[in-house]
Image (cartoon, rainbow, N blue to C red; front, side, top):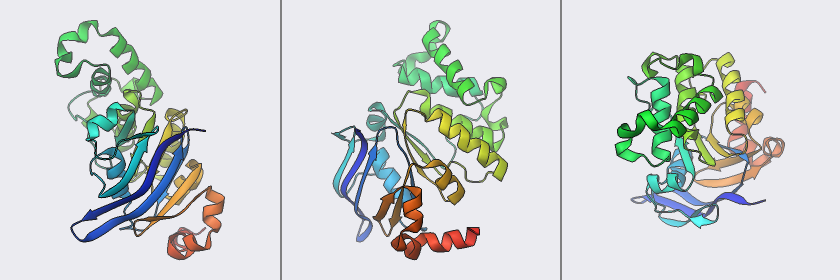
Length: 253
C-alpha cells in the first residue's frame, strides 16, 4: 500500500517556543485518519504545516513520495491536497452552484479569466452538478451560501474542497457546532465523498472519531505518542494517561 502523506521528524518553532517536536506520521492512500489531542497539542499547527500555510523549522513533509515542505498552499493544492477550514471560506452572496463552479473552474485551468468561458464551460458545469448532487445540495442550487443552514454550509465547504479532484483531503473540525442528528448525517456524507480518497481530520467529538477513522493519531505536546486503530488507541495506557481517559470519562464512555 502506498503512502499518501508522510511526516519525518517535523519540528515547528515560533521564536523560542517549539510547538511541533519531532512529529512522525505515515498515512496510507485511501485511509481515513483522525488527529486528536488536548488543547494546545499542536493539531492546527500540524494541519498548517501539511497544507503549506507554515513552513516547518526542520524535517520533511511528503505528498505521494514528493517533498512539499516549504511550498506555498496553492502549490500544495496543485499537487492534489485540499483543505477545509474551521472558519467558513465561502462566497456568501454566490449561490451553491456558483461557489462550487468557482472551485471547479480554477481546477480546470480557467483561472482569473474564467468569466469569459462560462457559457461554453460544459466540462466545468457538468462537474459542478456532479459535486452538488454528491453533497446533496442540488435542491438548494440557486440559494446564496449565506442563506444556507450551518450544516448545509459545512457540506458546501466540503464540496468546494473536493471539487478540484484532490486525492488528499484535510478537514478541520468538520462537525463542530452541529447537533447530534446533524453530526450523524454529516459523518455519513464525509464517508461517501471521501471514498477512494485519503482523509485527515482534526476532530474533538470522540463519537465521530471512533466512528469514522481507520486509524487515530494522538498528538500530545507536539509529538505523536500513538498511531493505531481506534480499538488499540482506546486501550493504550499512554493515551489514557495523557488524554483519552479523561475525555471518555467526560463523555460517559
